[in-house]
Length: 428
Image (cartoon, rainbow, N blue to C red):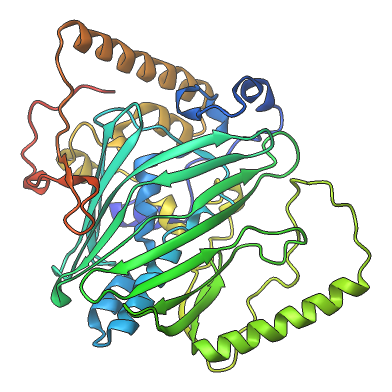
């Protein structure tokens, strides 16, 4: 007999049931038919999933919301950009070792999260099924920020790896400064899909723009390279609108981010390159055949250049994380449901989704049956709509131009938190 408060603290550190072993399942038998194809149309066995919907996985962007509050409190635009860059990097940190696939949201599925302790509330909705698009809108409880966007996770299979390119723009508005920042997320790749230990890297350039000042932060998420020297590394610069470098940023998206003076950073890079080249010329070139094994990083941590300032450091995961889908403490609390919550959330909230709940409880066969049933129900509903030539109407978001970039986006329509829910679709 737990009280609700006990129940919350218990759930935050553990899930009801540990994960199943995936060793007896061959992902290859499913994927060999789909090389080079997009994966959104392929039904995967539930054993490869983690017990969260992609709408909940998206919510993990918010784990380090304190960086947004901190940005709001700073008077210098460069310092604000440093915090926004740290937030953008921290937002993808929970992907590390998260090799389970989140459940594809059903059309019309929603998710909400209110965290008084972190000072935000968030709402998301699955606004499109083909292509799968998830829209979200978060706001600070003290009206200090708004963070919104829509993501279409474009998945491609390349034989040994699956690449997810998260198409869509992130927009952060710092209301007290009347500033808007926009960026897109890096590409995420899961390696060793067929045999061996799955591992994850993120790569690509992330360009954060301050639309009020014209300042930009250009960050490069490095691919790991041949000897793994670059694994998980992120580095880049904040520059003013005439492209003058104001400060350098460096770190690893799995660990931390630092800022330092650009001249100091460049001197360090030059010296580091020289040392690497000396090492290389003495090293015999080994097996150059492309391997998909995870390279072992030279040293686990980031070398801190003297004069650097720490902007963000990752929160360690709970000790039982490896048995719990490598969830962070934040992720473990996302599917939590108590009686009080159940009485106010809409019936489309994915906490009420039976396949995810069954998987979280360790009932894998039930999860599999329910997943099939829900996907079938969704197909039937779509057929019925096309017969009656009825269009699907999104509930909480509408399409329109992003006010800062002008590109097509999904914008929050309002009224969700009035708690007046009627005519909601029956999707579960």
